[in-house]
Image (cartoon, rainbow, N blue to C red; front, side, top):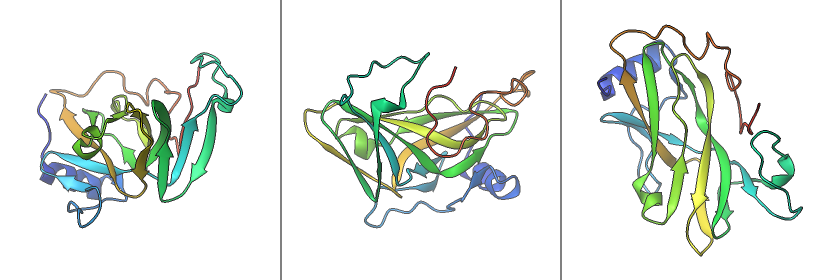
Length: 184
């Protein structure tokens, strides 16, 4: 399963609208970098955040998730409380080809500050804005910058297309826009 290079990502982003909007070169002047890199694509986080709160003493249950577990914030920065968690989504909309699996890793700039980014794999023929989970593992408040790089996506090409794609399964997160909370 080879990782796909910049020219393959560029070609598919432009010809198949695999990444929209697509930034063809890595931007880094005064911002946490985003855009096309050698073997990946650094995505940006949007200005909408959902921050975990315990105001209503809610219980986190993935089978019966309560939106009361969050407070919503919109703006150019998000402050995540110590030892807490927030959700956001990518600015970019992704359309994954049938023979590609995408994995995501957090940006080193954030990781070196104790901020961990998690995204589950983007399956073949999944499409949408990616919901991003951000954990502040530190005992201090952490600042996240909207419109700047938050994570890097790596595109892995299968030897052959899969038999059943995410689209074929009618996956519950297909076509999502904005932050998608857990669904059953």
